[in-house]
Amino acid sequence: MATCPIVALPGTTPQRILDDPRLRLICDNDRMRFRLGMVVGGFIGYVLGARAGRGRYDQIKRWVSSLRGHPAYLQLRNQVTGVGDLARTGVAEGLRAGSRQLREAADDSVVDITEVRQ
Image (cartoon, rainbow, N blue to C red; front, side, top):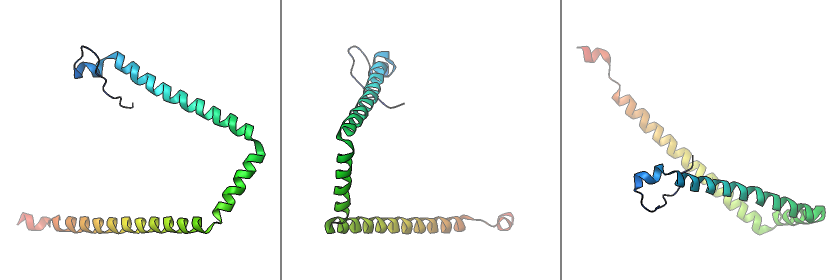
């Protein structure tokens, strides 16, 4: 269940606010309003897209294709890919170093049972 902001209702204490059914109603209304907005927005987008028709779709598709061939787009794509690769490499190195330290700590904490008994 999503958390709702605490609303200061007249004559209530913080403990009573959390148990107040009026607050639950406010939260449920907010969630329902969001869902209704998503459905209405999706419907409006569908209708407007259908009205634009196939010609507009083909026009947008051609525009995106021409954009993908533009040198600025290619340069930006290469930069983003490079940053992603660098981040992936950094995370992998960090995980390797952390696992190495954990293994070393585990090896140091292992006690030979025969030494303890004597």
